[in-house]
Length: 314
Image (cartoon, rainbow, N blue to C red; front, top):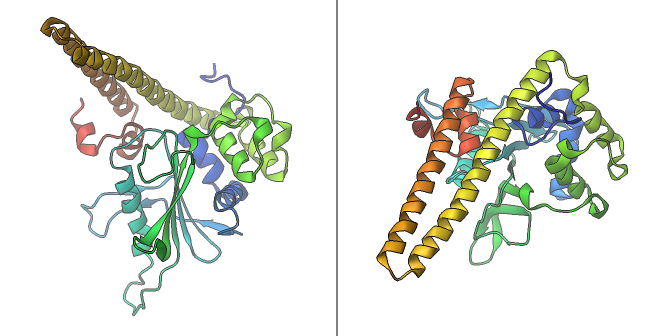
């Protein structure tokens, strides 16, 4: 019996995202998606997939595994990441990831003038980043190295695009651009039971055909269901944590608003108990992920924990 009854895969899962955007037979889908994000500013005609797993120059250095890593016909590098859970140092992680395609451009044992090809880091975020530097009403954010006084781009070779997918709320009849259509599909594909008329062209015909679960082999179905289970576990845990966080906030407000020490003590005790429960939920989820054989990189991505934190959980 299938674990999922949906007709199409979720692109928010690790398996779904990499199947659609990270495989050679589907490179036309990645090209269309990237072009929708850059909206004519950067035109990608072709892509060549690169090794998505990187290690530092020294064996002990931290390993980086990208969801999708490719270069276009001009040798410009693209890292595309899907992030479902908020992470304290995600901006730092983006910077760290960008160092790999920069450093690998240096030819070994040869003279070099340090001319670099462009490096683009595209981060698709299934949450509200709450970043002070971002315009609150915008979903896509373009980050570059600028001179703070003139506000002009200092070096265009390194660019970041952060897309807050969770904030996108357009309906089918409101999809005006290719970008709108791709973000809608990214967020809602698994909820659809047929291909909408608004999403009919050669690219989206290919997407819906490739995303249909009924066409999967037994192995593909098993891999997808494992990935879907991991995604649903983290989503349920995050939703629980949010609910408990709201309750904790109410308890804290009650404590601050009460003049009597007894009421304050009760509220603070309630808040501490809820915080403890949230931590226990996360620990239980990480333990299950470790038993299922999920790697550090995926667990870090789903939970926002560091490798040290993960190792500390039995």
